[in-house]
Length: 372
Length: 265
Image (tube, chains in turn orange, purple):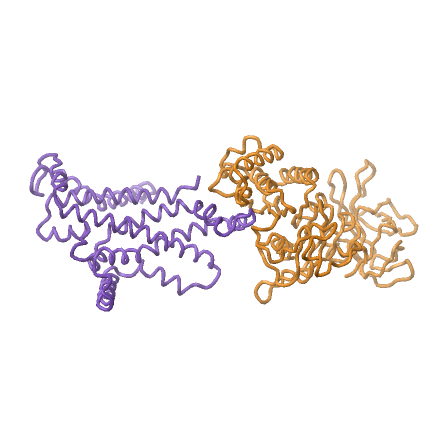
């Protein structure tokens, strides 16, 4: 099992009960222990989640709908109460603290801007509720408006704003409160693709400049990889894997994570002999064989040679399908009695065509075995 | 029938309906300005019946009663109905079937049954405790009971129309429960509250049956006065009262409609 499997692998000792009361030295931004949450009798949203999030981290909760990621975020915000488990934010136990007393702010999926208030009053809402003097509210609002570059949006009414503008106001409204942790619940999911990638970059820059801890929820693995320092992949109310994007993508710990990160080339291992594993593709040498039951071959690590070429980890294949994408081409290949996906960068060389005989070259150090 | 003449027929029905609805009102309004004493013919324009109203103690007292009743009952109904509407919203996911029916029943209950029951109830209370002699207080209670469901329904539908995340955003942005009510909920539903107030006001001014059964000797409202007066025949004075009521109710109804449509600014 890789060291990115659990958050506790960082070598930290589990906090004692005394550590809950007083802020611990070098406290994590967020520390979760044994969170359980159930809705009604049958729906288990969280089935025991432990997690440490470091200060200043862009941390993403990634998973399909119903995996528990939104419930987890809502528990961090205080909008949902865990049935079991403890939650610390900034070294302070906030398990039983109501949301309006937590130094945490949320950017909601629907933005949730108050329709009865102007943009300016929306931005000032959190500060006013904390009892800040009007002059300081104005100064802070002006500062954040400049930082997020809201320009003349500040004097508009909320119903005059576009989706992208609402998104930025919602972000500014949460940031202006300067919380310990900012929570983002699929904040970009309502936007079209172009605006979305633009705001991804903008969000990332804001986070790096402020050095604030961000916890981001998404079901989009591309978005998660672009944005995150670390990703936690959730399924069935359990954390499947925690780690930096490259770890999660290149070294998934199980079939669920691999499939969710977009991998299709998974083959059950039928036999093993030292560093050689046998699958329906044939026998392949694997640098780090591990003890997983599945072999993962990433399509972009494969090379295609024209014709039949003999060699180690060379597999004879026939092109079944070729999707030309400009910068690269995606292949479906028939190997032995199964299929294999391969992605080939378009370097201007010959791209094999359908029914052409090719040889697939599999690099042994790019192969990963993983659990079912 | 071709499409064009079918459309014309539909338009005809529309105009005919409007005519039947508003022509009688127009006649009453017209004759309230009649110079002649009789309702048989219109002889010339005059404001004498309106002047006569101002000198009529009975009418002025009925007008005052109507206003006090309408305003006080609307304010009380607004406060209670607002709380009920919010409660219904908060617990909308639970099965509230029978409770909702109980709250809405007064809307469909025949006024006469409602009025008689209220009267019998107040008589019993008065017999047992000496309180609640028929008069303005009993009328106010009776009016509040039939106004509440309308207020509750308007407030509830306003809350249902809101993004549920707004309630969470208010919590998330450090608003305590009291601050959430003052700075988020009340301002957000303000148009609905104003609309509900004017609707309650019109319902109260309009009501005759329930007022009639719960009124005391000193608390005749305008409808009760009119009903008593027309037993002696429809005088042009009654036309003038009716026209004024029509104007007041129309203004309140239009105000209610405008505020119910207005998006919070």
